[in-house]
Image (cartoon, rainbow, N blue to C red):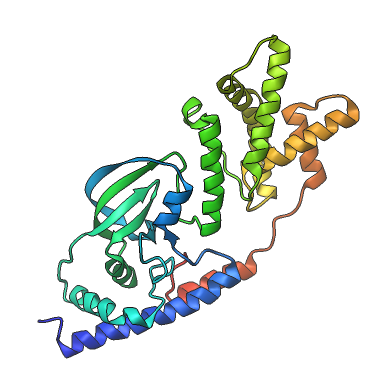
Length: 308
């Protein structure tokens, strides 16, 4: 059977129209649920993150839901690889017709960064695969090496935070000093505060030890003796349960300010445990109701639209 078969062509074009309808509805729900809709541009990622090099990984089977961006077609499809323009119909339908006939299509060409992938070549093939509910796709993969990982749900806004994180790691080299570190904020400006904390810690260390403290010494000691003890106390008190949508780094930043305020007011340092406990008592709040959001997600599933 040829991809020119009238029935196959009709089905292929009908499925494109269905994908366009899903893209429209999904865009509305993305706005209502405040979740990312746009796919990421590989060029923007490269501009914002420090790429140390690349390595060829060869032929692999890749989860399609981890493909979140494109090198050149990031405006043509949404985050779910649903087509955003009717101009894509002819090529999309042609590839879909081949897929409907179970023709083995060539592997897509992908870049890998962290746990996610960007299309170098094969955007329409990825889109067709997702429309058919395909979970994996054959790909030829090249990995781009960065110090800041990307995650499948990262948005364009998250990318701005990753850029700050990348700059922070370049200045501190914390990723080399403490390879297991993961310091992530939910809002901009946090890493600049950390630089101030480290500089202040370096100054105090110099006074205590009566010598010049290197940046590497200050960074490592701040992480071990200031940041981690606070994070451990945050985990013991399970503070993230009271601040949904926030991160451990967010809470460290706020509680560090609170700790300094208590010290200035009382002349006594409450320490990590005391600062966390006191902050929780003052700012404890109940979990927000998520009924409406759950209803939206349920409706998305009924309509056959994947969550971004």
